[in-house]
Length: 154
Image (cartoon, rainbow, N blue to C red):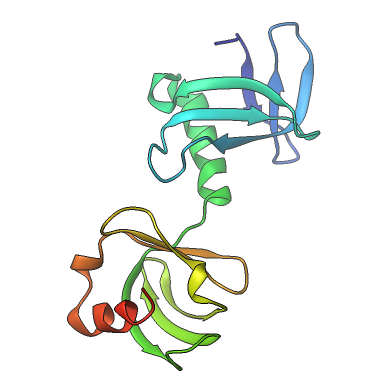
């Protein structure tokens, strides 16, 4: 791992000082495996889109750097988890879904069945029409009515 210093600039963006002393403003972290291994493989990417540093594991970093990166990743990786499906407007697509999530209740449009992607036997990633992705971590943990609604689209 390259030696670097990471801090929050007064503008609110991340500032990376690399091993050569060069400053890079507007750095953002990108997870290599956001679903399967969210704490493994983090790339620090500059404002031009080039990788500036590679981090094997978040938990191997000093606590101040890890906190900065976790804050940035939380903003970047906004993926509410669906905990209940209250209703679906139709069993064809596009359809409007009314759901409860770990971030509150919301409504979204499912454009097509291909926007529901299986990540494992029990977990799904659903791409809503407005660009937000929703997760279902464990279909078995959903209530019976929610599972029935979801199964119509799988």
